[in-house]
Image (cartoon, rainbow, N blue to C red; front, side, top):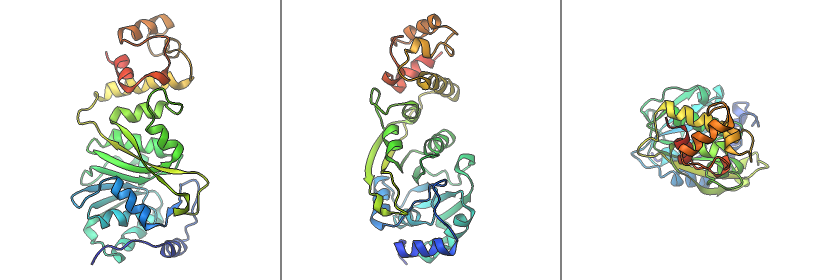
Length: 279
């Protein structure tokens, strides 16, 4: 039996059955368009041999598109009602029981994923998208690539290069793990309810060789946080507290790393920050 996808009418029926009223807090703008969920799966290059972790499956529209491609799915869902219903929904749409595992939990608290999935796919709300992505990349080194749908502002920041207007701490921290790219736009009209913001797809590929160990990552991220705490501030001032306790000590450390002490955080790449943080 081939896997079938959810339609808009069924999504509304499911929500009514579960007494689910889409809430802004949980980012519950459900995708009701089959072409869109297939577009996300295609952008993520999901194939039948893949093990995928999906964060926030909701009523299951994107879940079924991943399963339609032949992959197996570990779904992490914070809403207990949605987590309990998802296996029933996928079974009704032709999915074998052993191809879906549901974890009923807050994604930020998840520390283990069965089967070590290598692909991440998600539709993430604005307020938790960056923390959730960074948590999963930090916690699960077996994640090799992924595509997530986020608000345009978030996606553009994650994929921003140094020197661009929206480049900031999330851009640098995401780049620690590998390159990010904008992978497509998503119409507001494919959501229920229709949001008042634009959405994009953003993709990543994890570097084959890590930039450093956990100690270097923590030190690098602390320097990134200090550099962007007050935008447009020279690094010798912004990093004084974390590089020796004074502007003079910070200048010396920056010069050793080959970074101009009068430059600003917005100008530096992840490699620049790693050189500053390296012992």
